Length: 439
Ligand code: H79
Image (cartoon, rainbow, N blue to C red; front, side, top):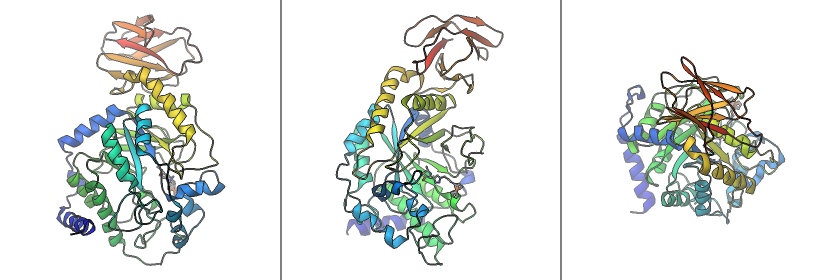
């Protein structure tokens, strides 16, 4: 049998043999719980938004990149020309993964299919994919996975449940209404298609770090058959982590909770009103203002701001998934490469206070946050206005207090429930002044 036929059979077999338990009864496997621990220890990952839209570079508008099909109302038959222009001859998976390692990141989450419906991997269930339709003709995701395995980086797949291309994504929701698709379609056939693609992603590439869903917000009340999809994923790869960017509290069957462009508990975006649940947390953020490549968007955040974001995330028990939108030729934007290098340099020196930690006792304050590991609390001072700073200690007795790195002694006064630290003069150039409290 040809590989394509074998895959079809495998997909059909898998889809018909997964019992649909309500995910309310979902008990994560031991391997899943291990993945969650690993995830919480890892703290820092690279988000990659890459698709055929990158060739348009946002079309000259700020704020548009991977949304160009929707925002510029490009119909399906015209958008379908883009794959032919997509030929990233400078794509070098080894270079990407080395950059990620040097940045101190532990995982990559890449768009396997964004809202435009175009698969960036070798899909057999549809030829609307990078191997069959793009001029490049190679399996980007497959190449990246191979390199990630080589270099010890975990790969997660972003997958958009919302689809602006598939005719059976009907009835449609708030978006995808300008694509010239017929006013009819078989919703269940679309969900079957999505589950088949997820089956491919979870059977063609070995162990997957997680599935990162997005797009449910397009129509909250649609019959997504989530129980079935989540059960399928947990069956195929019990260790893989399921999360969804639906902007609500986690739904049964999910393994981590994510926040978009806000730290847990913040809501500058307006759609992050949800509470913080019990699952591992992740915040995703862009390095400029765009997810996909936008040629006009040079509003790059500074290295210092991004390090502060990473530290603040860690102080809130959250990972930071920091995004880059690769250019149409396959290279990472040089500005991003430079910043990631600097972040990696900082992490080489201070990583001990981030990796493997959990949030410390202070909570998030204007001056900064604290992290905690073993018998040490790391107080991260990101901008103190007061010369003294209170750290609650919940019964633990502080034996020593000193500045991380220099070892300079920090004077502290014991209080009934904590300690009062007297801060030295902290130079403005210090990105994060870290005080270690040993107990
Ligand atoms: O993949 C990146 C973006 O393309 C995608 N998620 C990140 C990770 C994303 N799409 N939209 N958004 C993020 C912002 C969400 C906007 C929304 Fe709405 C506001 C969704 C629902 C209300 C306006 C109305 C846009 C869609 C409907």
